[in-house]
Length: 66
Image 1 (cartoon, one colour):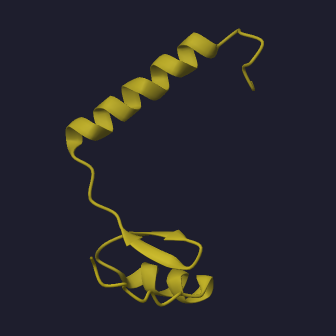
Image 2 (cartoon, helix red, strand yellow):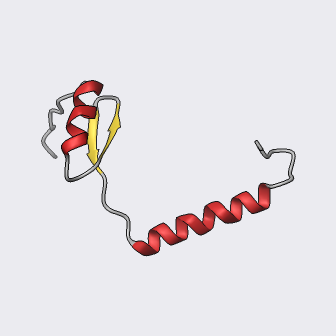
C-alpha cells in the first residue's frame, strides 16, 4: 500500500504571484498546483483545427452564441 502524501494548499494570490516568475506553468485547482507540460507544435495545430471546425459547424445553428 502507498504512503499518503500531505499536500500543502496554496493561496490564490500566492499562486498568481509565483506564476509570474515561474519557468513552468501550473494549473491551480482548489489550492493544489499541477505542473502543466508544454504543448508540441502538432498539438497546437490540432487544437486550432478543432476550434475552427467546431466554429464552422456551429455557425448559423440555433446553439451558436454569436
